Length: 173
Image (cartoon, rainbow, N blue to C red):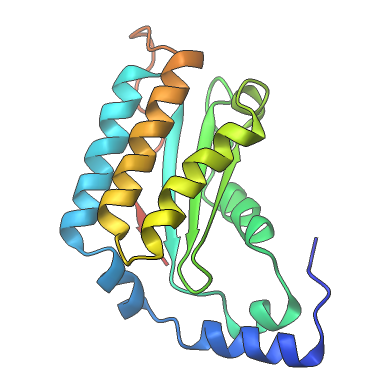
């Protein structure tokens, strides 16, 4: 649901997002961090049957920010756009990071969503955002992925019958 914001709030939010650039995302998530994330996702998927994608967006377009598009709405849009829902057993999980607002949202396909509680998802998100406050994107993201992988392994332990269905590389927008 789009947030109902005042004119001033909409303008301020649009300006905040206007300052976010691809360079902002590359600074927070340099190549070594992206490789470490890819390795953590691949390692986790060897332990569980879920498929994990991670998308970092420096900022929404000013128009989206002005219109009040929520982090959750954007995460759901990217979940569909990148086909995270398109896994054999409905076990796709998207971690969406909005750098301009230091917010994290997790969108899970229906099979995963039935077993993992909102509180568990929020715990993973808090692990990330807690580190983001201090500018620690590398360690907090890897810690959250470890937490997520352990959680997914408890519900969907790997049985060796399925190959990788989604790319493991994180996406910078």
